[in-house]
Length: 388
Image 1: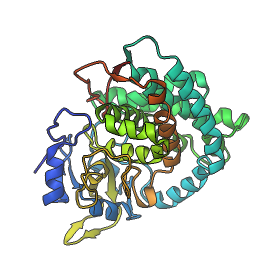
Image 2 (image 1 turned 60 degrees about the vertical axis):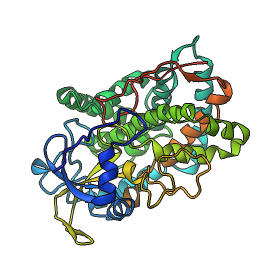
Image 3 (image 1 turned 90 degrees about the vertical axis):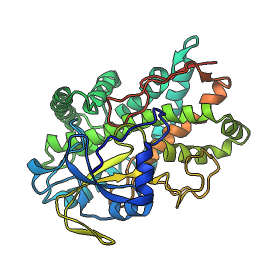
């Protein structure tokens, strides 16, 4: 039986070859996770979509202490939430968070995000610089502060929480960060009950009987999705353009391609790191996919990143084409757990890539060797040295 992580090519934009092999031969197969637990790995586009559409495939487990884990980090490595009430709670929380991601709030955040991008680009020092530290890492955490309602002076603290929670090489520190963040979230919730604003924690503060632990769990999900994944996509999206000057020229000559460029970046940048863009779920009921039976409690790794390279769906799946149409990627998942923050991520990426190469048209890599973030769930780059 194969065990994760599969051997990597070392290219931050490539998926381990074994994923592609399984996609061709066994799009749903049993594997061992990095900690040695058994799980189903779904890599085929149609299989991933079918499983993601199952409402009973969730984050809760009927026997949490016996649940398979995908890694040792505190975040996304094992079961969370209450199995018996998960579906009901999920519907309630999505309804609640819907206001946080409403069109009106997104419009309000868009102007702020564009200003933040302009300020960060203007603040670049003399080249070479590390674009990861100058842009990719600070921007998403600024946005998360606005979204959650955290003080802007807490941006560095939230970034540290995000990094520690997602660390797969230091389980003890990851779980310590989990407890620390729970305490931080409880304090923020109390402050918002006294002084509400237009933000997620103010919305959560209005829910009668909402436990601080549940608010913290939701906030951790938003923090990871809003900081870790967006940061990685800014880094790797920049790298895609640097490697494909023809696509960079296309966008310069036709700025209306920015939406297509963002969708193609989303498609190609979810598959890095140990997880290769997989999300861990557990079967709440018996599921049957063709002749394969997935039993209650079985762990399932939904390979969204691999599915986005399925040659049965995407012509030239490894090519970067900002005019790709259609582009039915599953970078934000599919079905009842489709990422509620997708519009915010798109706003951030549009703001970055509509401006970055216009402000620095001669931007280029300033290194022959890129350092990978092998210690984090989402992978990506530890640094992105550039010059112009």
